[in-house]
Length: 166
Figure 1 (tube, rainbow, N blue to C red):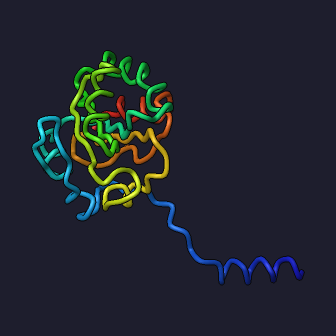
Figure 2: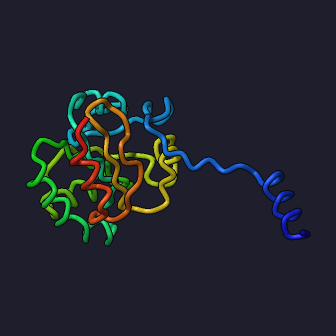
């Protein structure tokens, strides 16, 4: 009986955890300023609005990240399998020269932007709770986040999100 009372007390007084995954970026995350390859600045919201009506796979990476580099062959296969999908690469490299060299070195095809604040600071990285890269997200044709978190390019949830029909 004591066990049941203890469990009841714990259930009542334990803080409630929210495990919901967001389906939209916060206003602050949307306002994050990204840098394009040519040096132009645009907010995340402006960048994503360019692809309205299309599915977008976001790959958050860095040129120094061994796991990011290991996942690139899988991303290349996904690009061949899903040519209609936009592959949006967001680099957290602090140096633009390292970011641009990484794109060339690894022959990355897609849309490229840099998050100048890196992976530890800023509204976007706070919103996605970026504690590890690579990080993959999928945005559906309506602009909703259909996959919030995958950290391995072979994660079956990425394939499922890309195949999902809206």
